Length: 284
Image 1 (tube, one colour):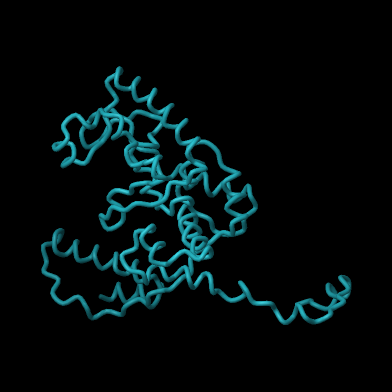
Image 2 (cartoon, one colour):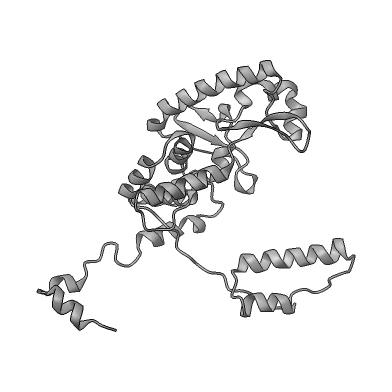
């Protein structure tokens, strides 16, 4: 317990980090050392931090997306256009896109939940071209004997040959065919999330956005911009897949952050600053 106290007091880690360390220690004692841990509650708890999410303005989103291209740009369009998590996007299957209903079906999202979210119409033409290319590639893979996609074991047993059907293929497949370490089968996995992370970071730098931008920033921006457009918070909660509306409420705090709609009183004062005087008078 001294180590857990050290994490909270000396290292000032987040509550989630301390919890992860607690679970690791419990696993080590119970399963590794075969020692009964007993009461493990007498340590100093790390405080939960309430950090506001980083949100981009609409014009910043436009600059960011304009600095991206290819598959990573398509993924970013869905992250912002549908409020998806990164792993939800890269794991999409062909059948999860309903172009007629402008809907994306998110399967087995966080907490093992399914949900529907919006498919941005502006992304549809590029998505259709992308899928057309993927289908030709899939057919070539089938002929080469590498067209089988990974399915969870329960689905693989239930649907038999579904792994070789087009509707089960990843929307964003990897460019390379690799051996699946679980089965030894050579196949295409989905696009690796690090590709999108690197592309978003590079695009933010190219666009001159001086904020810490990650793919998840696009999801935060989706939620905030919907609330700015006066969509009902319950609707936003459903689209994001939050279990509790309290989780979605954090975006109302972003909307109400100081300075967003407040006119600074300093701007009401007539000031005639001389640049040379300013430089000479503010030396620290």
